[in-house]
Image (cartoon, rainbow, N blue to C red):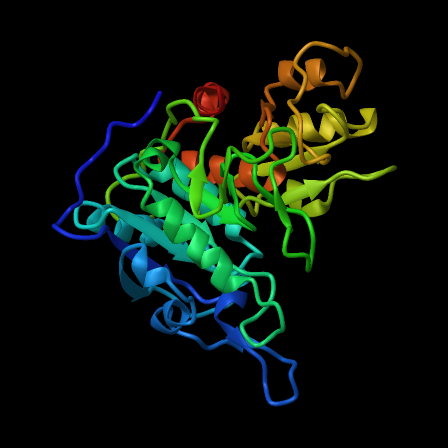
Length: 339
């Protein structure tokens, strides 16, 4: 379904808010050409992109200036509130940040925001002082996507290397390549080519997680445990020091038989979500049946993350717990949001 066109918020070219959070896209190296750190403001980022002013009127906002690994869920909740407050005043919003947690910011925003205005996230794999820095091209493409009214119904999207990705699927899959972002199992839903936005795939209507008014006083502590051959559950799982657990299991949702009793005991005290360590694909529900199979684990009350990887399953569980969802309703909420 094509989004109905919406007139600009004010006469003239569309107005785009550019919220800058730091990261590689804003980083410059020291005099030795190494040891880069976030230094460039949002206004400086925009000034470095030739022709970007022809796409829209641009309003920079310095929301943070730090590596993306410093960001916490509470920062994203605060960012979502900024987006809500400004969405009635602008025609699109671009968010620039570091790539280390970009996929997590995008996914959490997708759980929190209504489809009121296009929201686009981007960044860079090369800092602004490197040859072939990709930040300006990514920012130009992001603004181009943000002024396209069709993008509004997609929810927040990631624009990187001229591709448009949905936050449920996008992952950073390489430490340094400019093509580091992809969506395993789905691919991009659109792309930018010859100054045009192509959007052949329109996502379905998204479901949200309504958090209580105001920022949460604390975010649930939820570790991610990844299983390997011969794995045992770490002691932190049974220590009671966390409010939930995400277990990155083998394949389509399997664990060693000798961990089943411990997992069952833990699931009596906190929600345990099963994701796959493969990073893509849907978890099974009833294909295998042995101690530690997906059928066995679900029967014991563990929660299926369906197609989410562990990082996103952790954020969804945290958002649901912060919203006050009871443990007995968590699987149905995962199913509602991920249907």
